[in-house]
Structure formats: structure tokens, C-alpha cells
Image (tube, rainbow, N blue to C red):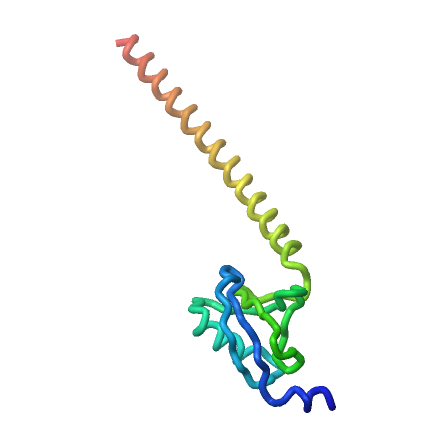
Length: 134
């Protein structure tokens, strides 16, 4: 409790967008247990279309609120929300599902194309037979 009272009601941070970390903006925010104010200001100051989460630039630790941040921290604001588990695992899983679906669709398309070619060839040969008969 003593540390929080020394910090004061506001926190001074430097924010930057994940896609453009070179563009940094200083901000002063009220300390809070959530990111509502931080994300709202980041969206305006960094001209971001979408904001979802934040992490510390130095450590990469996920930021859940501004209450425990030290003055002078550099916070990277991300467009997507950041979960507790590493995003790579969930991304690989969804990519694997997409590639499996894509492979299934591709095989269906190839089979369909082969059937169409077969019908076309049969039609041509039938037409040719009729022409020879007459």
C-alpha cells in the first residue's frame, strides 16, 4: 500500500503501436486495474483503427492495467487482444485447420474437374460415333 501511495494517482507512460514502434507518444493516465483509458488514448494518439491489448516493450509482459506500472514504462499497444497463452500455439492450430480445409476443397475441385473432363470426352466420342454412322 505504501508503494502505491508514493506513485500518485497518475502514471506517466510512453506508448507506441506494435506495427510502428518508432513512433512513441508520452501520456499521463489515471492508474486503473484495466486498460480502458490507455487503449482509448492510444487509439487517438497513435491513430490506430483497432486496439485490443498492451505489453511492456522491455520484457514483453502482458499489461492488464495501469495501476502497477512504473512511471517511464514504454507500453506497446497491439491491435489484437493478448491472451495468457502464447499466440503462436493458437495461430498454428487455426492455420493447420485452414490448410486441412483447403486441401479437402482442392481434392474435391480436382475430382469435379476430372469428372467434367470425362463427361466432355464421352460427349465428344459419342458425337463422333454418331457422325460416322450417318
